[in-house]
Image 1: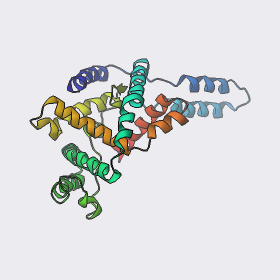
Image 2 (image 1 turned 90 degrees about the vertical axis):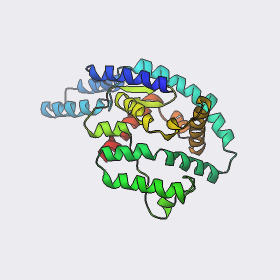
Image 3 (image 1 turned 60 degrees about the vertical axis):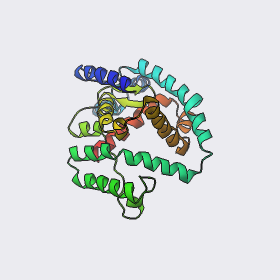
Length: 259
């Protein structure tokens, strides 16, 4: 996993330094061209409509690597349906409260990432909340298996990572990337993902590789077991799941950065 992240880190900075031309949605552009062929619109209204339509027809994130990304998306799709989700469904034999406790344990381990990035963004209150949650949940919450900081003290978990930190400082998302196994990302966020690995407590424990990756596998399996088949819903309802996920990812990241 670390080798894969290093590869995308190097690729990311090369792409980030290159000029990225905005990519238009072909189907939308063709439809707009057909509509603009009508002659019964007022010229001024037509110009305004063109400008407004062009603004909304642009994807939220540039995707010049779409053929490559779609290939990785296909691989991830097969990995999900033929390996990850079947294992997660078997894992669901465990009681849901137990699986939720496991999820809280891994979430508690992610505190250094969230706290450090909140501090880098000068969100001092959020930094204090994360550190307070870690102290309370690691002790009274039995290592994070319980969340007394949340349901007793009202200290809710924050969502911060280094990709968001870069965005707050004005770094653009760069090109859209679909990472093997990790899923949707961008040049900026893939770089942030690599940086956040240095704050992962598991990376500093004296564990063998198989132990480390087993824990990571458990984290993914547990999370999927708690997911209400969201991806299956996207596959069933979206005309093009790739475009839907790309748009949803870009909107989600923008919202996280702007909050």
